[in-house]
Image (cartoon, rainbow, N blue to C red; front, side, top):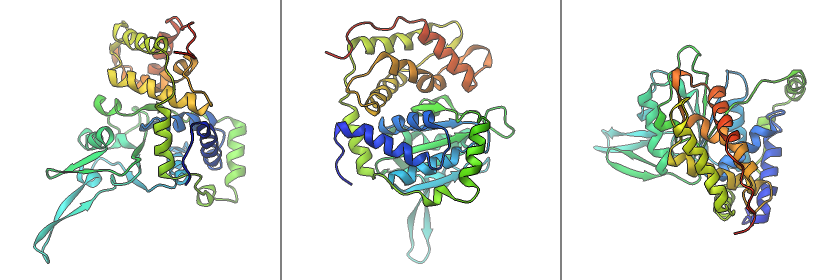
Length: 321
């Protein structure tokens, strides 16, 4: 694939979005958000009921980027070594040999991640944060890009475990596929009644293109007033009487990087306040713990939305230094 120039990021994002839309019907907003998350170098957590297209979405992105893809079905009996791999003694050669787990890939689909125990979920922490895996004291780097797409069922679903806060904080954004209306359901039937769109999907870019875009995204300008705006949002989550644990510094940086990617996708070289307002519920909602034990996706996202609405929007000329 050819090198991606800054001005081409919007074009590439559209090509990826159009390609994924051949499989996922009428979810343009979610596809754009996930594309921004990928360009920002993050991992994606998707919460929704079974059968809403979460797994198909992850597979479609992997095929569009022409990268290695592996899937792990998380179950209560899944062990950490089933994800990372382990050393097995080869009697014939009288030595231990490493059997690499599915984490050694570019896109890892952790399907129904909250059906596994917290211990197994935590086996992804090192891989997600440091892009490496340690097995029996030996540390191995993962190929770039490394992206975790995790799907989870709502916590009220039978047989689920809550995700540890440390793991939630490592997902760049969390979103939902949302309910389908009548027109969308009819479009899905029309799309799938005779065809298999995922099998027919072809790549529009490669791993080098994604890595090049990630470097370009870092050059998107973030004015000091926008930086302060993001910090004010984080500070308010720590002061709010409705929130027990506010947004961490990792969350602040995640919102900055995601806003840069979102701006680039829109063809801009600078971040606007609207980018921050749009992304804050998806980037910060899963990083807070509300009082009263209410911590579902919609409630937390609405809390972040209320906080953002209560903070004055920067009026400076955020296009220039």
